[in-house]
Structure formats: structure tokens, C-alpha cells
Image (cartoon, rainbow, N blue to C red; front, side, top):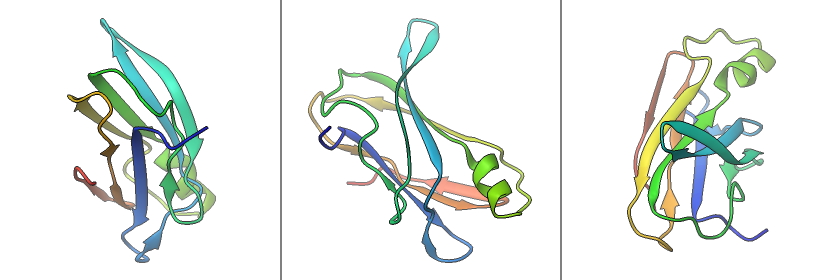
Amino acid sequence: MSISQITTHVLDAVLGRPAAGVPVELLAREGDEWRLIGAGTTDADGRATRLAASSVPTGEYRLRFDTGSWFAARDTETFYPEVLLTFLVAEEGRHYHVPLLLSPFAYSTYRGS
């Protein structure tokens, strides 16, 4: 599979390094429902670049990060067992990079490139 139109990069904000091994799901809104269209795990550099097809139609998408299992594997308490990031793909064919900066009691995100 080639690189997805939608990618992510998870960074461990406490340790200042990539968060390898975070399970990630990509979902697409279909009416009132969310449909799973891809899944993966962040690599050694904290990136997930093959979550779906190389091109997706315009619409509303969601990245679901299973942060609870990732923190549990590190014997770390967390307030956020999952992080859901919902965003719009407004231009078909354009790359959408959605990074996540993660710590046990906070997270932040932004539109990357």
C-alpha cells in the first residue's frame, strides 16, 4: 500500500521522542455513523502513514488513538484512554497530516503538512 492521503505522527511530549506502538484507527462519517476504513500502529518514528488508500473522497474523518493500551503497556496512568480527532478533508487528493502530541494528562494537535 502506498502512503495514505491521511497520515499522523504521535510524539511522546513527556520523553521528547516518537511514540512507537500506538494503535490508530481511521474512520469516515457515513450519514450518522462512523465506518472504519483503516487501522495501523505507529512505527519506530511514531508515524502511521498507511492507514487507508492513497486517496479518499472529501468528507468528515476521525482518527482514534488507543492511548489507554499504549500507556498501560508502559505502566503509566493516564486520564485519556483514547483520543479522537475529527477533521474535514476539503480537497480530494491533498495530503492531510494530523500530528498528536501526547502526555498522560494532556494532548494537543494541529494541521501538519
